[in-house]
Image (cartoon, rainbow, N blue to C red; front, side, top):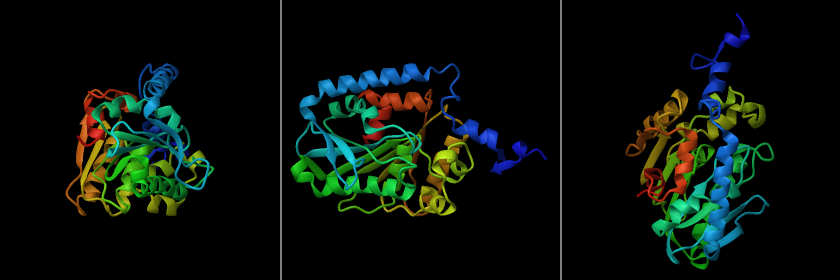
Length: 283
């Protein structure tokens, strides 16, 4: 048998698996550079518009990568924590400042978290950094101008994975809501596709950092939101987490957003009126 035609995961060949997780190639005629340019314009405008509310590059951990941007629009009010995507290997919090346009009009404070990327750290340290960000925000809530008892969490793509990982962690105060957008909850297929050329995930890392294999700590509102047009593997990922965690808590709500792909879902977070933004905030 031709090795290229041999199944590597759930009856899928390496080529088929690569196609499922290459989000750019899944969208016909998609101009990725134009898309990024549009979002970057939103990043710049958000930094200008909300400059009086912004505390940039707040250090929450011991390494240079561990910083967050904190927007306080309602002193003493609720906080939303957002984890960015990029398949754990690329992008930065500064690529997601536009999310402020969607969140702040709701009167919710916002922290956009940065973390070190693989391969400069392993997955365990990356997840630990995200956990430290929430610990820091809750423990320093009063001085930061936010209510540490009203913290919600969301993330997109790899950030959706990280949001789910936070639902399997304990914090000084219970999270109010968690929303995982376009999330990866089972790392086994990631270990078998092109992404592993950078990630180099071990079997132990797959076991310890796949939410579907963990027990949720968080018992509140947990919403899984994936674009209807993101493909069978992204749909399976979300469905698998709902099913796995339903044995340990009330079932997470699962939604496939009509007309949305991986990138339109991410872009919708700039719109305060979008159902995507409202879902992320647990509204």
